[in-house]
Length: 161
View 1: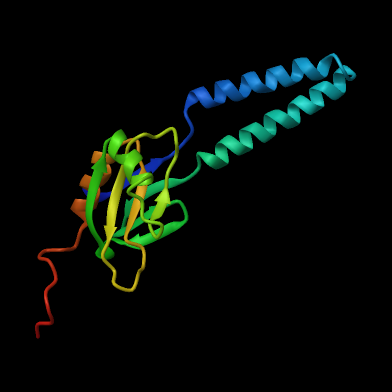
View 2: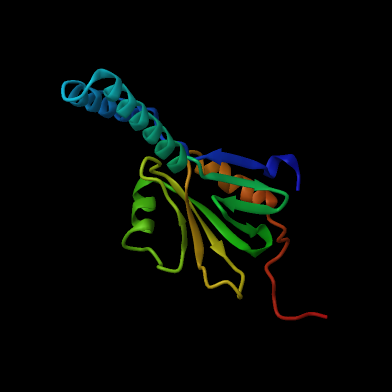
């Protein structure tokens, strides 16, 4: 593999989620500060801020990466030699692929705040997963990296000896 086939992307939550979470915690503080002593209100608010940050960081923590011939998506991993065609999907195609056209056996790493995605066909006969569907901020770059990392020179044919 060359450096051009390396790819890395974190599916972090958008800034607006942090703003909305902060506004929610501020509303909580306003409701609590009038009902309980101020030190307790600040303690409750501190716990709420920590919980909000932990949830947003955890939900936005998955990384999609391609290096050393291995595609990783969150905790899942697959060798590129087991992968077929990769296709960048626009928002409408991604919505259909995750909805009405979805296969229940597919591996999905989707985030609602990422409208585009990549579908990667799995060609390993021992793997029941037909494809991976991955949310991506840069689907074309991921597809290009997968194509560059592909070890396939020619499609496999019957046994030759």
